[in-house]
Image (cartoon, rainbow, N blue to C red; front, side):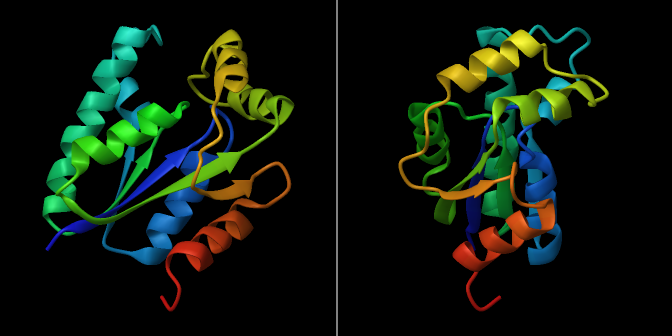
Length: 165
């Protein structure tokens, strides 16, 4: 039995992880795979393009195994460009029964404020660069965490993607 794939995208500090965790907890039989979790294993993260490639590759390998075992896989990462989101679907194709995207949107000031409170914040200049370069997903469930509580955002995602559950 193949699992289902949800790709959560948005800028650092948007609330992706909080909303994704709430969705995962409420749906069950799920695994939350975070790019931040893989990056936290690195001794001295640089946030370089090469490092990001390694981080995403590692996430895809874990996701592939989880999908093959029937889990709902929630990939939690910036996925700042449409081709990055498309790459996730392509690299995992054949391992999932359905794939959806969730965009956790947020204004820059809110993201910077939240990011500064993290134990290991992303450098603010990186957050600004991601914000400026972020491509809005073509097809995604969008929740604006600047105006919604994490719980309300998770309810919207569940209503949109898990009708009847």
